[in-house]
Amino acid sequence: MRYDTNRMEKNNLLALVTGASRGIGRAIVLELAKNNYDVAINYNRSEENARKLQEEAKTYGVKAEIFRADVSDYEQVVKLFADVKSTMGAPVSVLVNNAGITRDTLLMRMKPEDWHAVINTNLNAAFFCTREAIRDMAKARYGRIINIASVVGLTGNAGQANYSASKAGIIGLTKSTAREYAERGITANAIAPGFIATDMTEILKPEVKDGILHTIPVKRMGQPEDVANAVIFFAKDTSSYITGQVLAVDGGMTMC
Ligand code: NAP
Image (cartoon, rainbow, N blue to C red; front, side):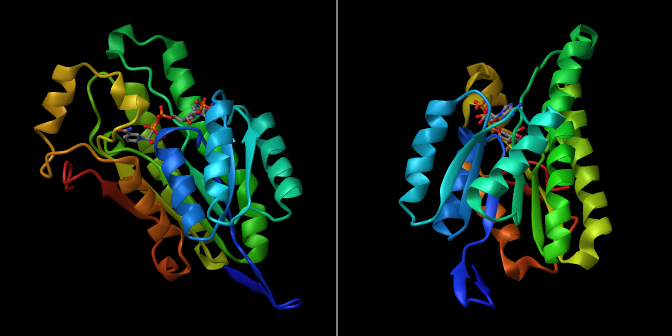
């Protein structure tokens, strides 16, 4: 929350969360709303879910609006940021690059379109959104960019060459953004979730899930709220001295 020094009115900061209709993005929106951020909810296909989330976020007394955009498409991202600013009457102060997909298969079987789809949605979209957000953040000399990576961006994973590369890329993007904009009051950090219970992991076979659970010291899957809590930590004013970091939210799975 900020005070407009000319009018001495309290203004909530505005947070934009990409891919927020379900799963981790949904939990992030609710946690931001609980913490008095106005929220711009981006979705691509799940409009009904996005509308329900909008209503739920509003119960916390903040502004909440939904915005359809395929964030892997640069033109749509440009329009998204223009729409968010005009509808919400404020620029984005907190950007959470969360939209992500998987197209898992072994390298030899991975089609170029599987590669491109994952890189476009998971990595290019984060660059597009960061590029569109950064001008206003630099002008305000304040910003928080939080990128949702993955532990496989640190470790690699068989069957996920495209996804692991996109998440390793997002870590590089995070660190470069952090270095370029540290002096302007903008921090950029990444969160690397481990094995979180959402639609993305629901599709895994039971034996695959059991195999992963054995590698997690806390012996449970993470919940979307576990990731959302880490987002709030980075979003806060009090985290201004933390930038370019990668925080694993993985029940101790990686510890690297
Ligand atoms: P999910 O349940 O499958 O939800 C994915 C979200 O991304 C949906 O809201 C979807 O929106 C949105 N999305 C996909 N393509 C989009 C596009 N082109 N433009 C805009 N939105 C798009 O996934 P999740 O598990 O919550 O994952 C969220 C993030 O966490 C992803 O970046 C993922 O890689 C990362 N992550 C997840 C896990 C895990 O275990 N679940 C682990 C590590 C990292 P629509 O339905 O509206 O299309």
